[in-house]
Image 1 (cartoon, rainbow, N blue to C red):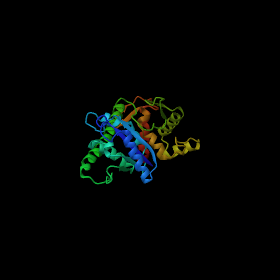
Image 2 (image 1 turned 135 degrees about the horizontal axis):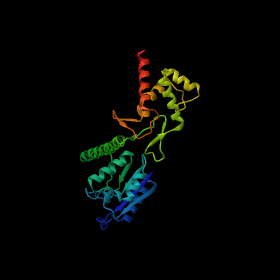
Image 3 (image 1 turned 60 degrees about the vertical axis):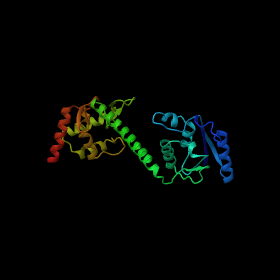
Image 4 (image 1 turned 120 degrees about the vertical axis):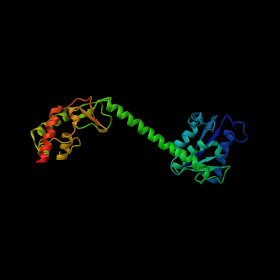
Length: 272
């Protein structure tokens, strides 16, 4: 697909030959001469192409035509401009626009700069590109750090921070807390009752399967899946986060005493 982009800013409206109409006519004439079928010409009027440290929102985010163009282009598309100054007039803006286009392998044609190559190795671009890549990494790290801190705060307050609820529980409607899942909770209590009696993990699994009770995924129980539940002190009201045990706000399905007795039975059978 072929697209055009035109722009005039408050700084260059009076520049000879750079009005919107002149740019559009130039792009259409070039396309017709080369047999290109222009799908759309995106435009920005009165928005500066410079991106200063203090006005990046005005320079980039308010250029709705440019934003629409970058959101529209797909792999292999071609963008035609009268001059690259219509896309950028600062190194930072240039780095942002180039990176977005290069990610989609877009070809950029500048009518007044026939030798311009978006993919040329310009030494002056390496520093800006390195900075942009570093900013990308920093942004991802910042998001991850923020989420990690949020999980820690939530866990320290006694709430499960994230992830799938253990078998026997489900999230509340607002997903802020968890509550017992009645059907699964009954099964959990049955497993701990059998575990406290000293039944082996294999026998407990066989008993569940004979009764037609399946796991959450609809599979048969195994010694391993039974052990995962019987070893999890979450059912006794304990929340474990980053190796630290915290009193949870969720409703326990068994008592701490019963949990301790089950652990003793499991350890005894292992020693045996």
